[in-house]
Image 1 (cartoon, one colour):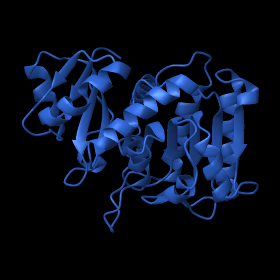
Image 2 (cartoon, one colour; image 1 turned 120 degrees about the vertical axis):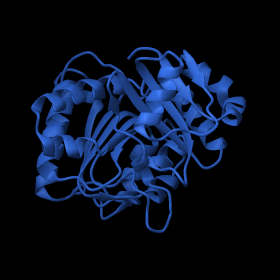
Image 3 (cartoon, helix red, strand yellow; image 1 turned 180 degrees about the horizontal axis):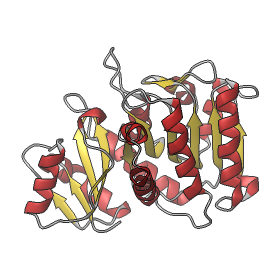
Image 4 (cartoon, helix red, strand yellow; image 1 turned 135 degrees about the horizontal axis):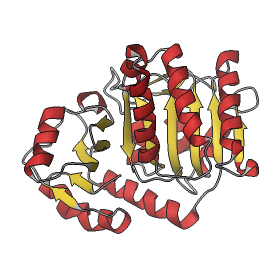
Length: 296
């Protein structure tokens, strides 16, 4: 994944720089006067500092900027990751979550889905793929709405896991599955261990809500409940999403675990090689929030 570059304001670096370097190995820390969000501006900043490849983590205040404003996950030889905050303490929450995960190291992988047969069958495929070789069979669980309520799912997620994948309808405030799963279902429980990586194969989990509330994907990171979150900033379509899922599962079916960022780089290369504009268009709506080095 190459060298790691952090982009933040000077004040953020002063407040959390030392803490972040304790959990992520940082090669470059760039402090522009304003945080770039357009692809051209980000690349120019990196090139001016002699950085030609690697992983870029952008720490940015939520409000004027949101996931939709930033470029796709992979730009040339760069992997782009975003960490949003409204208050700097929320970055500290995320850093604490990274440390806590390494202390506890939850092993479970969870397959989650919406109640509709289409998505439950999809969830079964995710469950089977995760059991093939990467995770011990005993550590892979499926929690579908036919046996799990939103309250029960909140309790299960509060116990932490290495990986959770949800498939089904979604919106900024949460998932349509489980008769509507929202962050308050999780907030009822103390987070015993963080979720390592949460992948939401749904619409709009990172979209700015009309009511200007925080998207659930960002809240999970800001509260330190999840170390990494992969989701979309807009609606996606079923057919290309199935192709994207298959590609991700092909990688996750392989034996060796690897950072989520590396998984996404491999997926990106395979998706681009398909030369299918519809699949690429939907893939480019995904954003990685949080820790690109979270192992899955």
